[in-house]
Image (cartoon, rainbow, N blue to C red; front, side, top):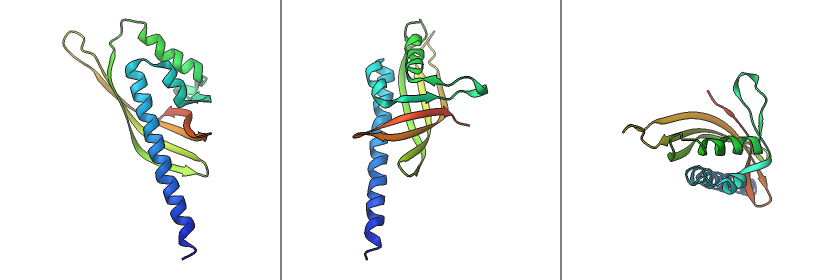
Length: 140
């Protein structure tokens, strides 16, 4: 019986971490739709890096958020829906790795709306009382 107690604590912690990470993804999704840079800042760690394909230099937190916000200042179609779904969530010590499917629906242009989807792999760590993304990279 004594051997079971530590396993229950770990299982509870994992479930708690997953719930908190899912809540942060909802916060991110809402921030994109509401064009809320402050909320975006709260989801990403100060040390955040966005890895890119083709060996390009990773983006810092500031560059990543500014890149998204710059699109908002153009006449590009507005995001009307943004959803992030966790496909897998694994952990190693105090770090979680989430493979997610992100989908964006854009406002109609000439009567036709567009939807795109992509996969990302996000690294999460706990800072104080909350989880933050420390790294994102393109998935397959």
